[in-house]
Image (cartoon, rainbow, N blue to C red):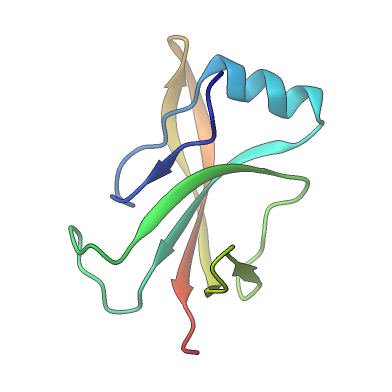
Amino acid sequence: GDKMSVNYDPSKKPEITTEMVNLAKKLNLQLVNIICDEEDAQVGDPTGLSFITMTAFLPRPEEQIILENGSVYQVKQIFFQQTQVDRNIILFPNIYSHLLPK
């Protein structure tokens, strides 16, 4: 089946599949796009990434996200972006975060 999507162009729209939506619904979780960026990064820099994951709650500004590799990102902004799932237009939550110094 489909896996959660990882993208190394954080400016790209999230790509959500029906399978992802159904799994989140089954687990009673919310799909969200996490955008991890560096403070002074420019669009196209190879430093950022984004990934779709599931969560019980949307992280709030100033909260931290710790990735598997130990990198810590601080949530800066939450915004909703229009995207499509099976030709249905939805507003999808995006969590924009910056890498914290080690």
